[in-house]
Length: 366
Image 1 (cartoon, helix red, strand yellow):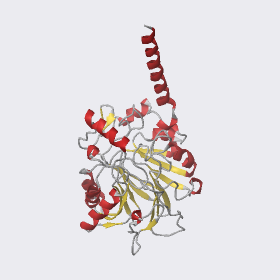
Image 2 (cartoon, helix red, strand yellow):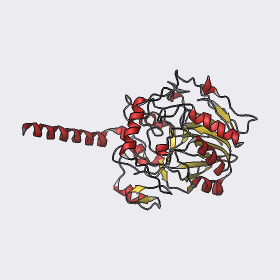
Image 3 (cartoon, rainbow, N blue to C red):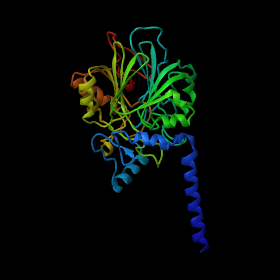
């Protein structure tokens, strides 16, 4: 009897500790208020208490697949990350150029300088894409192309969804004082408010919302993915892709997405695009519906009527089981076969749109 009671007390203690951690550990983000939940219910993409994709998207693996995936991750892949840290280019902000400048910081993080405005896309600048820094793979480069306090004033931070490899607690806490406006898909602003960003500096959008800010036109467009930062908030917030349209430059940012008809729909409505920033990494046949393989990435670029493609969502962290260079190798091969212009900048290297040539060196092979 005493043993059973002790076990019950231990289980209750674990449950209470887990509850308190979920509720008060700030990295998990903020809870959506009842008032905001009422607003979310008005979205056409919100059903039965959660957001859904445009087409059926199953992410539920069978028990055998879950066990197999766990075993595969425990075994690891000897080529799943670089043998030595990746070198990065030192970031230097533009000085009044009229041309659009795009700088990749690894994974899906970018700084875009367009029409005199500075935009950060999915600025995950932490060392590990995990709620617990001691768990999870470290950043390949070991360092960033800049120190966070060296970043210029930011007009807009644009977020695609709330996963840890795209929305980082530590990064937001360190840069929030430099940012004039945070623009997110529905619900994601609750995390920012929890982390001390005033609601007056946050705006949230649904798919197909188009709006104007600081001389730029934006559209919040669909993606085929999911959201969640803890065990209790699966699909409680929306995920998206983005269009940024300036005076002379039209940009498409895919966010995270499986291949789906929304790419053609976006291309027909808003294309062509001068440049696309297209996800090509962290894929596996077991979650093929939410992450494209590189050949699909090239097709999606063609669907949205892109001119120049920059492959993203690779070269920073190991979140899947493929070789770390597979995404870019396969994307370059598919682009070459289909006569698609592709640029492969180093981390920290700036692309100036309208230049006579763009970075295409296979730097990851060295």
